Length: 375
Image 1 (cartoon, rainbow, N blue to C red):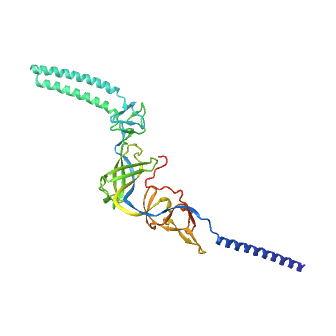
Image 2: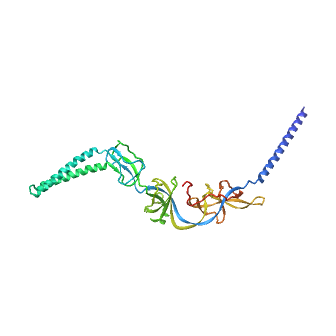
Image 3: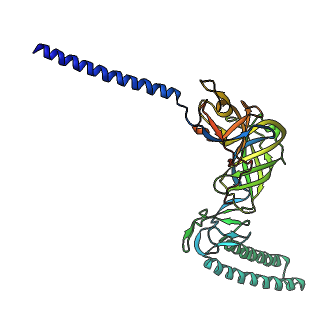
């Protein structure tokens, strides 16, 4: 019995050893196949790096402000009698926007007008009597004073009526109205915002080290990226003489024409001021840059050698120092030499030593002034 158990145990051990040996051979074969496996080359597009002269510029983020902008408010209290505009409408300078109820003032004006006419009649009569030496000069002076007082009373009531008519102080575009018919307004209550849109200011800040490069009259280009797709050209009109203590920046103001009113007050825009200097840089499409927290890089296509000594077309990752950006193009200050072949699309799937096949049949577009397809 014991001998039979020993025989069975030996058989089991031999069986397990055979299975383990077979598995070991399979694993070794898989490891060898993995080492010899060469992934298929990745399809990429490339561009030859070229050196270009880029005009020096200063880029900043600016805020749009109206040349003329105000929130109209009630001067005197009263009830809204008429509204003469629509929200978001263009209005002319002097156009009546809101009229308050002036029935009481008009009744007072009629009474004042009658008193003024009576005073004028009395003054004419007094002049004749004075000429005939019927009345004394003192009596005539009293009548003349009463005439002036009646005229002043009439003008005061007329001014009160005029102040209850809220007019546009300049041509512009109204915002959303804040009053309704029959609403009682206190003095100072807001009525409607009014903005002049055909010319705008753009206020931006530049570091104190660069402010010496700017002068009033320099050309400024502003681009809105908030859906307006607007590109405006203007000029610097004012430079703040004071440097901000906290940021060490200087506020600069530029004036732009805004004929189509695509840019609105309150928008943020990208501002670029062209300088008189020219810097030689390597210019690449922004799609060729592999952005990463530890450093930005590009992939350069070169002839590489495999472990077996065979030559193949592959890529090498190269860290770069970037400069300014213009549209779809970016300046590379260091890391790339003219003539090197740089990958422009498919960067995300590459690694150092990866084999690639170059297909430049269709290449990504890159322009310093890109335009949306629907523009």
